[in-house]
Image (tube, rainbow, N blue to C red):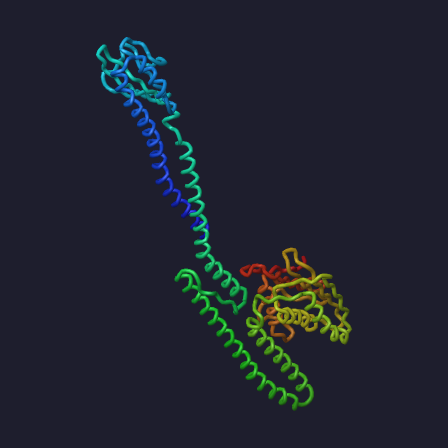
Length: 432
């Protein structure tokens, strides 16, 4: 918009300047010509009495004294002789009235003067240079004035455009911050009334979104309280049962408890730190692997860890990435026999960000395992769904692969500042 305003002002100012300068330039040329012709006419009027009354000797002396300003003055006497240098009038072209003759080199004023012995002719030649004296310099001044006025107009237009576009730019910045998850972003109403109204509406929308998310968080907390209380009572009742039924039902209660925790975590993840959060993927994965290594040691699982030697910032909250890694490692322990080795690697992505790879030597998993609510082994199936949402919220993807050598899950995470509107897709890695 700033460019359009500047171009509009430039076009308008140019039209106004042309409408003023072109007539002014023409007027300057006409004034210069009129001034030169008036001076020649005045000189002509001075010579008329002398030519009409004085003898030729005195007229010639007067001509020598009156030559001035670059004009050429000649007098053709009644006998056909020129008192000064020859002019353009011959015996057959003596005018009967004052005459103006224009040519490419200048303008001639012919004035017949009657004497007792005949008619003399006064000729005043005004060169073209004299007719245009000072015109070029004045045109340059007018052109320079036009350029200065145009530059001043562009400067004023630029300042005006900035005052109009700055509030719009600030409003767009606020909208981008809100879109990236920074719900504390607010626009400062400024500029025209319409822009101020939009800024106020955006602020109200941001406040309303924050209120709704707060209500969602409170509802999730209330859900946790309501579900965990009867679940605790159920656990106590199950523990009072005898033998095999007790062990089997306790396992079911534990699975139900984990499912409830996953549901609550999923309900709250949009309000924890926002899409604009970030962390170091190498640090988070290293901490989660250390946590799970204790259980891996108990189950005699060989763990291979390959971490990037440099930090890899990603556009994911540390808590979200930790939950996603826990879900991936939890699947390894839940779906593979004890003693199955697994590998965890964190490497940079070509497009920025990081790739977290978790692979195992187990029986593999179906491609549908990433779909919400679909899994096996008594799991709710929400673990991989949380990991997928974590990847997609950062602008990345979750890819699954399965072969005779085991399963591979690649969590591709976007870098901070990557596009928020990317539409990630699933790309299976199943080996042929």
